Amino acid sequence: MNLSLSRELAAKYRSNTQVARVLTEAWVADQMFCPRCGNPSIERFPNNRPVADFYCPICKYEYELKSKNGTLARKVIDGAYAAMIERITGNKNPDFLFMGYDAKNFIVRDLLLIPKHFFVPEVIEQRKPLSATARRAGWIGCNILIEKIPEQGRIPIVKSGVIMNASSVIKKVNRGKTLEISDINARGWLMDVLSCLNRTPDVNFSLAEMYSFEDYLKRRHPSNNNIKPKIRQQLQLLRDKGFIEFLGNGKYRKI
Ligand SMILES: [Zn+2]
Image (cartoon, rainbow, N blue to C red):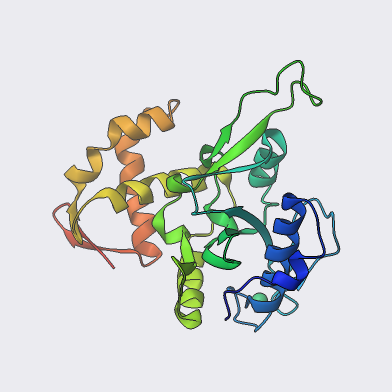
């Protein structure tokens, strides 16, 4: 993998937005392997498809690229809010590739993969409607809150200019695949409990530590009055999926 963006290609376009899109898409088409199956390349869809930008010719997984000049922020601006929520709840969203590049030096700095099943409506933030004077007055966009996605779903491919080992990327993606749940409410619970689990500092943790997130989880799921049983249920699910181990007496270990 070579992190350079094409200066020659940039010279052909005028607007900065256009240059950014052309360069980053060309880079992915030239340099990116399929992080799902390891195929050496992924293909570009014809332009202006509403959903994904790339697909793997072998495993058929689809990818959408979001890139920005500079370091990757904790939230990324995306398109229409309603459409994004519909895509997520309908399981129609592709995997996302978030890229941070250095436009001055024509180089990719960061590339992060977030597999599609880590997206839940709670990580999509509604932006303020465009003002009455705007061309698309009243239109509502969204931000993707990357920081709200559990770390198992944030898989670096390039990090601060360092290329990660491809086979370890694929391994992480496949491990995360066991967390795939199509029911959106069930997925929300699993992601939330996983995020709480990630916030416990040690490899070993207790049920009491997990119960300390009860108020937080109640705020995220206000209609649920049985938060503690729900926490235990999700811990069982994480055990069945091989992410944690039960040690007995309310003690657990992360695997
Ligand atoms: Zn593939």
